[in-house]
Length: 186
Image (cartoon, rainbow, N blue to C red; front, side, top):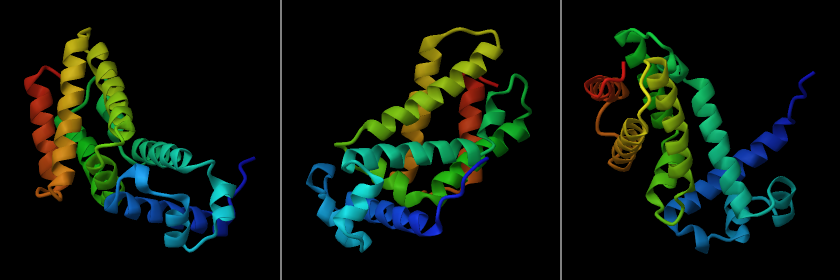
């Protein structure tokens, strides 16, 4: 049986996460203190330590949470199916870009802070795995294509977010799908 988390705990963790992300956009990760996070979240240090070991644990949990929510809230898993119609693939990619858009503060914070490459690396791993699965189903085995496409995708997402999303998710999905098709990933 699944236990429900107390709403007060969820609100506290949400406040801590939001405070952390706001601080992350203002200063380097190394310069953020637990006091900074606690003050911004309007909780005491003890409350912070009830939920996180330290700021590195907070960063890891924040990244894991967003990557898991990204995977589960999007139809992106359809993309890795063997035969997917163009319309379905674009819709799957669009759902991913909508998720990025809805969570702009998190993604812009993670991608704009050069000292913390953990998020970019984990996102690259996630996408490499999805692309690997896709090309394996198509009977191809080419690590170079996987790395190229995953790096290009992450770089494109990074550019789109850091430039304040100048194009709508639908347009981005269509462009990415076109690039995948040109490189033999369908």
